[in-house]
Image 1 (cartoon, one colour):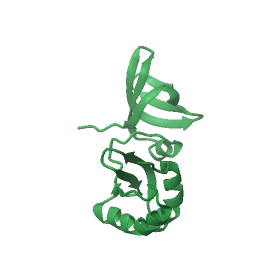
Image 2: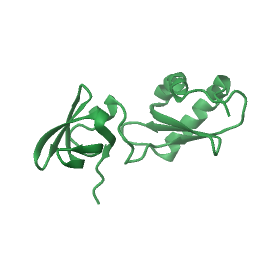
Image 3: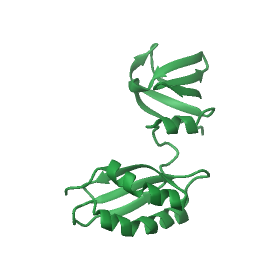
Image 4: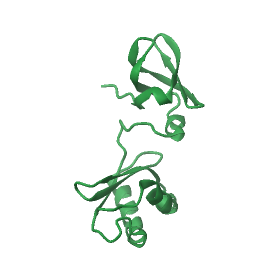
Length: 151
């Protein structure tokens, strides 16, 4: 199935998302199930009613955009979840002062995992306060960064 890029779809739908009061965080195509999932968020979180409101608002415009060039597909709208990876500068800035976990591709100072308070995100470098002090971690070396979920 030929599909339009997620970036093009997000750009097209962003004004509608803004009118509904949400932000499109990410999207993904699942070719196996022939589905498009859009992940949305807003201050205070996402519930089923917001997902439904957004879904209804974009259904007609998406038909006009025709992201699958006439092929049928399923549209899903979802919360990104608590453990969603940080991908954009805005993701980091939104969580300054909160505890995060950082997974690395290769060891840095002998470790591939750090957790602590997010202090900053400047110039693609994460400022993290750990139990051993402040660390500067280049985002390019990270395999995953997300909120720390303490149980």
